[in-house]
Amino acid sequence: MPHAFDQSYWDEHWAAATGHARLGPHPQLVEQAGKLPPGRALDAGCGEGAEASWLAEHGWQVTAVDLSEEVLRRARERSSEVEWICADLLNWTPAGQFDLVTTHYVHAAGPLFERLAEWVAPGGTLLVVGHHHGEQHPPESRITVHDVGLDAEQWEITVAENRTRKVPGGELHDTILCARRISSPNA
Image (cartoon, rainbow, N blue to C red):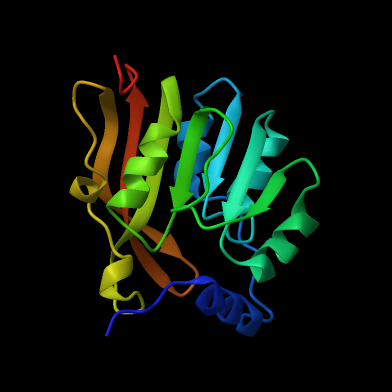
């Protein structure tokens, strides 16, 4: 039976994650955002805030959204420069678009990715990092680049591949999608 990745699930998950190591930002965020001029950024499903904090430290105006108030409590300890918001990304609506929309290991598909893509300004970048495979991740948390489903007339895909990286204790198998919006959806 699939997990119900709702607020109570994530609050319980993060409450139980005592002694959880504070990880640095995902290397794909550092690589891709490091090529961009700072602007407005959205970290969707920000977790403990490693990526949002890194972006803020590098001149970005950052809004970070997560469903769990428990994890946002931890994230707020990292940076006072980030606007931290507790909200369900399937119901939340931002004020305007962003130069960068990024999400790392969000446990959703389809409609969420459509919403994230809508929030990218023309000329802006969408960066999605997801679980490609692995026994420790439930099937509904894994994505492929096809799950994101971007319109080729509106997007220039710069990275669309599966990558493996070494981490303490083993390897992670990630799906990476990075795309630049070349036109607005109503153009």
